[in-house]
Amino acid sequence: MTTSILNKQQQAEQAPLSLHYLGDRTLRQSTKRINKINQSVRDLAKDMLQTMYTEQGIGLAAPQVGVNKQMLVVDCDPGNTATPPLILINPQIQSYSKELAKGEEGCLSIPGVFLDVVRPEAIEVKYKDESGRPKKMEASGLLAKVIQHEFDHLHGILFVDRVPNDLVLTEALHQQGFSTKAVQPVKSKQ
Ligand code: NI
Image: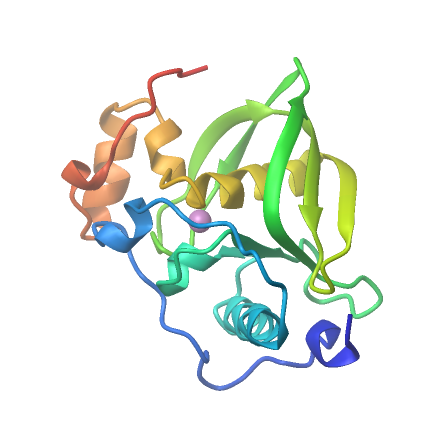
């Protein structure tokens, strides 16, 4: 872990990486595990964090910047320099709570669309950090929601896929110039 990665004063005028948007096939590709956690992986993490802060997101997954690797970054409290951001490499969600929580989600790849999604309220996640150290974490509330949202990205799933395909979804997408054809509903809706 280097301080340069965890420094939050990284908001650039222009994000270092370009975002991919709903309808782009890159968002639907499967991702590869990262075998070697080296400097280029840390550089990608740093660029993803800087992009996330610049675009004012609280989570970002590698496919959103056109990289089909299993990495995501999260910072639920970007304004607070006391709490470091999280970098999750090869994350695996090991357990889900039975309790569900409904909350509004948005996505940097689907700007302007905010809709309710139901997900398990708490999770246990296993991953490697940017130094290659294995980690295990329990998360609940907003953090659990963000990790699940970003984890979905690593498997080609977008939050709109989890919104029942009703008028609300169609209207929200059309208002922002997106097509409902880009939505791929997940089979097990809660
Ligand atoms: Ni997203």
